[in-house]
Amino acid sequence: MSISRYFNKKTISISNQKNNHISLLIVILIFIFDRLSKIKIINFQTDNSKVYINEFINFDLTWNTGIGFGFLSSSSNLIYNSITTLIATVIIFLFYIIINSKFIDKILFSLVLGGAIGNFYDRSTYYAVPDFIDIHYGNFHWFTFNIADIFITIGIVVVIFKDLLFKK
Image 1 (tube, rainbow, N blue to C red):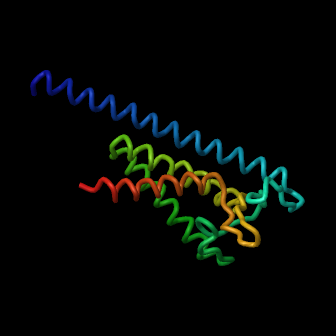
Image 2: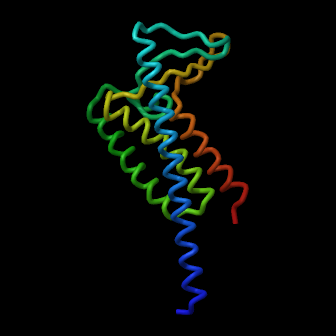
Image 3: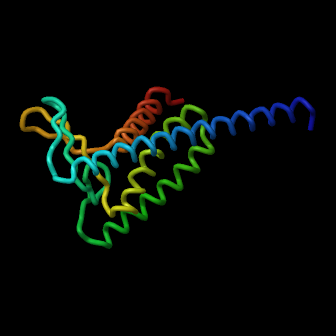
């Protein structure tokens, strides 16, 4: 192997390692931001009252046993444990994808992973995910969600649009 080839591989390896550290930092920051928001709302809303922000947004704590936006909610332990196992598998797969992706994909999948770990932590700790952001217009209410859901959604939507728009 020539010296220039050796140094080129070494540079790529160092660059990829730096990008992995950036991805890890993003995941950790999203997890912390998500945890702090949930701890604050859980401690504040112990009496089940809504917090009025403005005419379009309230903070209203609900406990979600399903996946994103309350889909697949169930009181069945079998369904809950199956969903939790599936989420754990997706989290492991996301680690693999991030390690083997290009920089922009690392960032986007890190957004998803940070949110997924935040919600998985809640599923493991509380056996439900605290959702509290209630966006509404008049009597129409969107699904109640949390900070982790925001990052998961942004990451997935941008990945889809990026892949559709820049398909080779």
